[in-house]
Image (cartoon, rainbow, N blue to C red; front, side):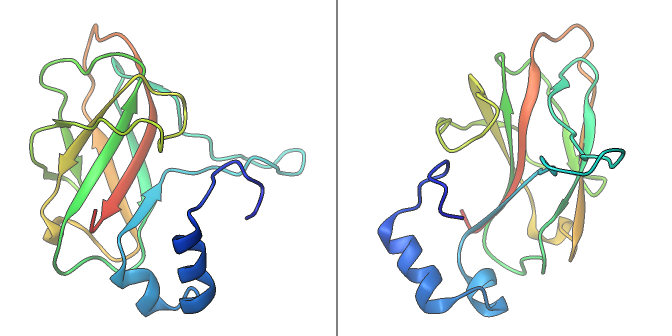
Length: 154
């Protein structure tokens, strides 16, 4: 938690110490839910690594978000190693989402992306618990998806 690989502002760290990780504290503040994997496992155990993925192949990722938002904003952010191809289509739990918009804050995304897009999603498309993000294949597209996350309230 305090390794320094993902520095946290003093105010955010103070909020964590003051409010803790109660359900109310976690669900009333903006939150991010990235695709993750286990980086240390015993021999023979799966790591769950789901990235990077070729844009030409598309992909599906399951992202746990806890309680689904009932109001506010919801979006999916993809970090890419190349400019997004035209018509890059995505669904959340099988429902279409808004058209991709440029996402310029690359420093807070892992995987060293050079480009990122944000898909606005209607909050009713989300489910409690795991949510399925599906990126349609883009045959012939260059680059990879290196980061996938669901953002709530941001």
